[in-house]
Length: 348
Image (cartoon, rainbow, N blue to C red; front, side, top):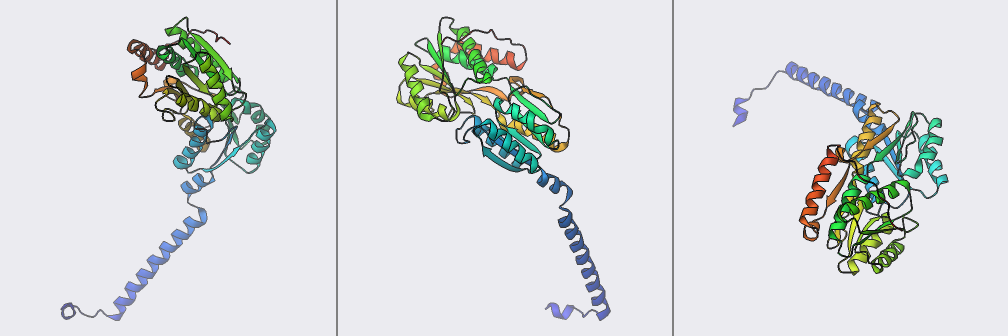
């Protein structure tokens, strides 16, 4: 039917149309080729941005190291960064890998822990185009920053919770090794315990490493034998053994640390003292990528919601209601920057 209505166009019209189509296609091809050759400015910037992470323990710990790895993934997903991760053991490993990443032209290298600051200070001057960041410490250089987390604030709240739930009047802390930030958080936890129950006993022990889950479980069982019925653990992979011990003993409760560990043992976990490492890493990575980074101590606290207390569903059924109201009140004061905690020592 349509063939009767259509009329054949003159040859010169067809030639004109074909010429226009060929010209448009050629122009489009040239633009695409140029974008491919140059990489596209915004895409090229994202692709050239490389971030590396050094952790002192396995990222399977569901705590300190796992949270850092999630932060590394956040830089990839949000900023388009190319990422790399390696687990290191000794200070010589810290420096060697810092140098390798600097020599490879990485934009940002994160040493995950207080213990990385000396290596960062030694290496950074040799690689001025690489930014080195440590999660802990006070060491800064033009291309070195330290992230400082007010972990003591939610640790104080955790201590208040532990005292409210404890029936024995004995609570405990298990750490990996006695690093200054860990010791400070246990002191704050102790102060929180005594804010609710001044006569309560707080026992502090250290596994001696961050990896031995079996040793962590043994420590927890020994503390349970001494009467502890609430244990605050900050021992990374070794701390997973504390959760195992609590699962095996009715009426024993655990407080997690660094990441939200509430689901590791839902019937035994009262809550977690959390550092939102993905958010913190993203903030500093954005500075590096945009060229606005300056070497300094970057402090995060409850006011920033980077560190926080995250209660579990179980807590409401175990703690005294008026104590939870006090916890909420103190947390509100922390967020307003109006709370100064008392300091008390833990008993050995």
